[in-house]
Image (tube, rainbow, N blue to C red; front, top):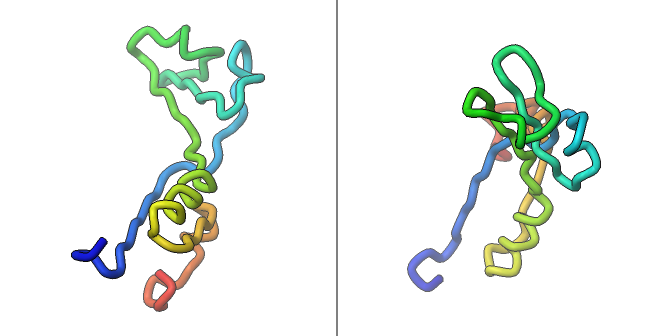
Length: 91
């Protein structure tokens, strides 16, 4: 903390994903499992030919950053972030 007086952290990822169907539909923050041509019901159905996506809990990360002494953090959605003017001082 003494070496870095004003630490900054930038994270970007999915802030929301479509709700999965099937077995994983009731789980909190359930992953979306997608093969090239279809969505799968569960990560248990993925046999090496699928991607598994988890939405990031940015509120949890914001609170952890504050507790670690990083200060307050802004957590805009992906859509709100990309609507900003890239030349403004907010970006």
